[in-house]
Length: 199
Picture 1 (cartoon, rainbow, N blue to C red):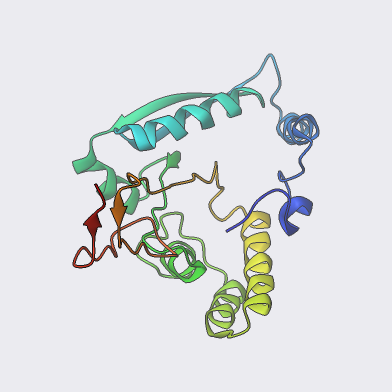
Picture 2 (cartoon, rainbow, N blue to C red):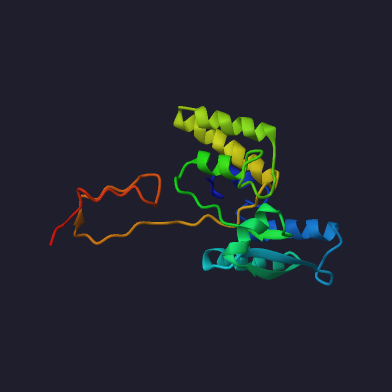
């Protein structure tokens, strides 16, 4: 959905100057009464599998830079989704899987008012209207601008801070021929009827 080189560069925390971002975050913490000698202790809960624990470790490392000492609370998968649905966490790190690389999938699932996977409970009717507008926009450039506007608003509202955007790829041997891969997803969509090996 975004990167620091795009329009989000002006949003809080997206300035490419990391030292400047950290100084601003420390200033916020200092205004709240915290500092190097008075640190905030929090628990970061997450699902106990590598795809969740690894980003949680990144988050914990980043929080230490701004006077926040976080302890990891790895939660068994059978308990994780009930826990976040109940909003039984101080800080909860969850991944937002995307079967299709399209803003609709992320916005409607994670940010609109009343969505089942909107675990933070974020609700902004103005953003919901923008989400609907971008979904109906046929012009790709106009839609892209609306998506940037939505993402900037989500950042400003601290709706569900993004720790990082992963990259995924599909690999195959060069002798595999006739395989058509989806252009907007790394998952499924593979049709093997026309696949053959050139050996």
